[in-house]
Each structure stands twice: as structure tokens, then as C-alpha cells.
Image (tube, rainbow, N blue to C red; front, side):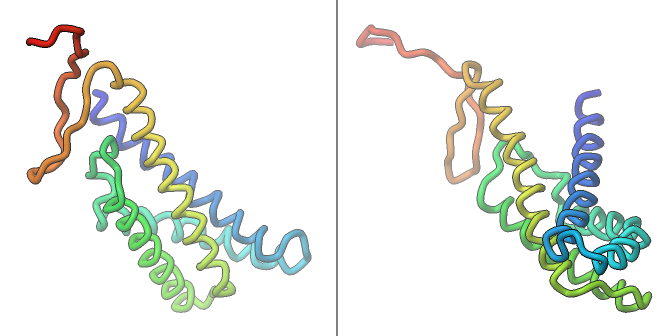
Amino acid sequence: MRYLLLPLLVVILDTICIISAAFFSIYIRFEDTAIAQKYLEMLISQLPIVVAVHLVVYFVFKLYGRVWRYAGSIELVAIVAANIVAALSWYGISIYIDLALPRSLYIFTASILVLFVGGSRLSFRIYSCFINKSKHKFISSKKGIKSVPYRKKTSYWFY
């Protein structure tokens, strides 16, 4: 049950991150001006497209199939690349439907999403390290990272 619920929870968390990053980027760009209201209405009309594009790109980049317990630099590169591709795709679609927002909003949204999505994935790793601290330790080898049971060292010189 846990293995089915966790990916759904991550998709919901990503959806919340996508929506909040889009609104946050409008606030950063325009603060609280009348111009912001015009673009805010355009963003609200594009919001289903934005969420769908980002989630599809995240699935293509296999961000939901990774083991985030061992998150590292490779996963961070995948998050950055996925957000760049998603921002470019969103920009292309918004030009196609003739509802283009200022280009800075796409850049701000992608940058904020790298922080939000990367932070959420890193929190999974931190959580798993604290939960499994006394149970397992991780060993890196040429074959990859593997978890082995943690055994406390004794004061004896023999085993």
C-alpha cells in the first residue's frame, strides 16, 4: 500500500509546487501592480496546461521512478533539465494558443521549481536518513549504492 501511496503523494506535492511557483513568479516579477492582475488572469487560464506539461515532463524524465532515498547530483541534474524542458514546452504552447506571458515568468517559474522540487526530494532523503540512521548504513561501490545492516562496533579487538 505504501508503494502505491508514496508516488501519488509526490505527484500531489509536485502539483502544489508547480502552482505555487507560478503564482510566486508573478509576484516576484510584478509585485502588487495593476499589470500583475492582467497576467494573473492569463496564468489562471493556463494553469491546467502548466500543471499537465510539467507533470508529463517529470514522467518523461522519470522523476517519479527514482529512489529518492539516495538522491544526489544526478537527480539534481534531472530536476534542472526537466524544469528547463517544461518551461520551454509551456512557452511554446502558450505562444501557440496566443496567451504568452512575459518570458521572465517562465524563467522565474523554472528556477523556483528547481528549488521547490529539489527541496522536496532532498527532504525525502533527509527523512529517510533520520528514520533509518540506526538500522542501516549506505555503502557506495562500483555497482552502485547499497544498504547494509548497521552493526555497532564493540570495544573488543576481535569479532
